[in-house]
Image (cartoon, rainbow, N blue to C red; front, side, top):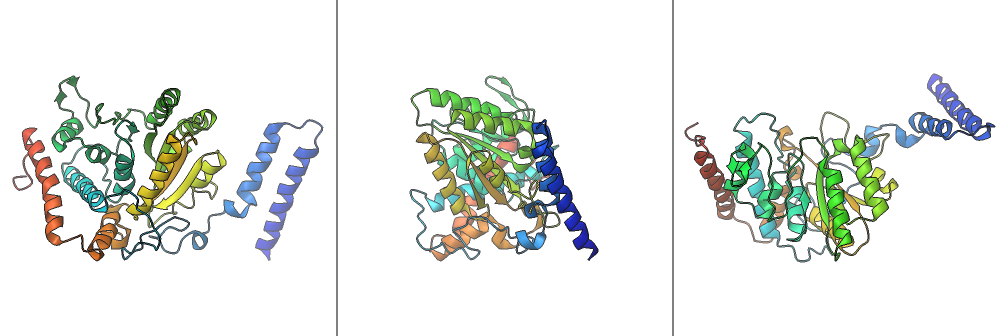
Length: 365
């Protein structure tokens, strides 16, 4: 009864504040804005975080698109288009092998990306050879999937000298393969990507620009400025946002004021979708649709991908590589020998690059 009375009082207070602002002789927008915020935080149901309403379990996010179930079975009628699923899988495995080996080097400020490979690799595959990709500081796998040699990639990550001068650590880029360098300030690559998209729109057209980032940047001014530029200029920009599932904290559906990144992007005027990062097929399909819209002049888009960091040892079905492996196995396209060969190729290339840079091999370390 006490809670009910408190709730009624809150509603009454909120309604009175809105009424006061709407009937005041001087209608100041700031008062109306404060009233709306007050109403949103204290009254609106979506403003309250209710774990039971937003997710089934700590590992499985709700309200996400998926076409590949936990057993690796593809939904009926799903079209993978021109996607070579086996080649896609090889690039996902290569990204994981690279991440695991580099994680064991003890590099400062290094954070593993295990479990987040699907949006990074899919972006590299969806982007055409002439289209630019602007990665974040943790998106090293996009260069590998784009075609940068493992040796060159390791050299850049370690800050070794390059033909054009001395490279800074953690700066991975390739002008030939259209992979832009990362920036010192977090999120600064987003408005730069918008500028690149503006330049593309002023040319012959038919090009998309991609920008990768984490959900933390969606609470910054630089993100909203980028969105405003993209929407106002109808830019061919594809924003790829990764939201993480943390088992002991509020899920990504909780968002800000109870909204997901995808919901907030939609309100801003972006074409947006929310997909499961443990399903590499739906990630590729959705990014392909977003890229096609950008190339056809239909404007910017945002794809929110819910990923599960593998450092928390989640259930196997939350691993995008394992889920796609199950699919290939069911199709008769996967064998243990195939897996060993794929892993060995990348591992040996990375080891050779590390030895060339003065690092001991894993067996000698």
